[in-house]
Amino acid sequence: MPHSHSSAPRGSRPGVRLARGASPWLLPTVATAAVSLAKARRSGRWATVAVPATALAAGMLWFFRDPEREIAEGRVISPADGVVQSIMPWKDGRTRVAIFMSPLNVHVNRAPLAGTITSVEHIPGGYVPAFNKESENNERVVWHFDTEIGDVEMIQIAGAVARRIVPYVPRGCKVEQGDRIGLIRFGSRVDVYLPQGVEPAVEVGQTTTAGVTRLDRD
Image (tube, rainbow, N blue to C red; front, side):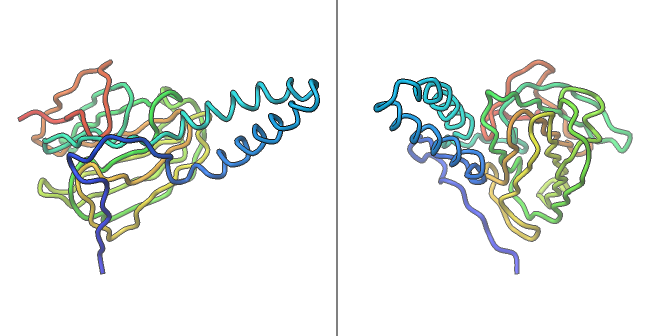
């Protein structure tokens, strides 16, 4: 039976937590930094390890941040933090909005609409940079949402560094707009296909914020 997956309530107090799925990368770097810092107190030679290890751990903590968001109103909202890379009309009447995520962006993705997840399909592939046209053949996860405006497709695409996409919710799950649905580790791309008749409200080069930036126009 389908079940629901909730995020923080709208209007909740802002905060930051760490993304689910970060542990395999985060724990080893934090542990290495902690050990090297402890040993550096007794031996100056360990300082050469402690400094870069601590910097790496701090970078990982920043990368895997997962801030709370005040979810915006609108039919379709951005599932990703990043920059609109392209807006392309599709042969079937849909419009693809591609959002490029750099390693500096929050990499937790959110549901662009409320609805039921009808498909979560992992497709193996390459790892060319996500801003490259050939990235369409990269490893990716294809999502389909049954929503008030029909079927909406979203694709998480791994980049040159991102070697792992971590879905949070399974097929059959009901989600609210803005719910956290997955993580892409490091630089990557997210595509949203606006249904026929839905006009994009964003432009190429525009910065987007997951759960906040509206993608469609009234």
